[in-house]
Length: 93
Image (tube, rainbow, N blue to C red; front, side, top):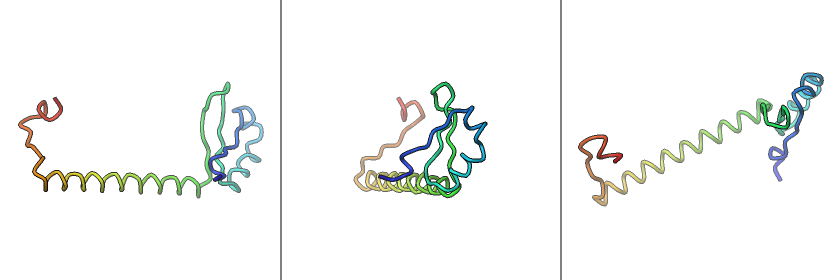
């Protein structure tokens, strides 16, 4: 299992008291640190590398969705199934 999926957890008060140790743990690990307040998620901290990897995955996913949308449009256009809308209400109505 990917270590990123097994987060470390700390309460807000633990994070305040052990800030340096927890920050060192985040820097040396690919695991996120979940900060809890009254057992509810308050924040998530990641090391820079994990954050950059996550952002890159999101970018690639968004790019894939855009390419699929373009492919779908071209397929609809080629098949003649596209219709021109006269106004916005017709488009979404």
